[in-house]
Length: 79
Image (tube, rainbow, N blue to C red; front, side, top):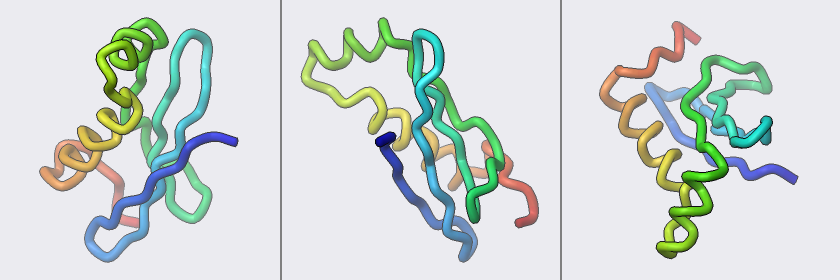
């Protein structure tokens, strides 16, 4: 089971899905099960280093994605 987070943007319910890929995790922004855009990637090596420091690298990336969506830096389309 993959991790999933959610956020709201301009009245839209957006899911952030974490998908494993070779040597990393991709975080996809989705709406109604449809992928809108790639929000970020967490390489395994970076994740291991963060975990050693007691941090959750995926959650940190989700927080960055939320900030980028709120600032308009990450385009989600018209919806």
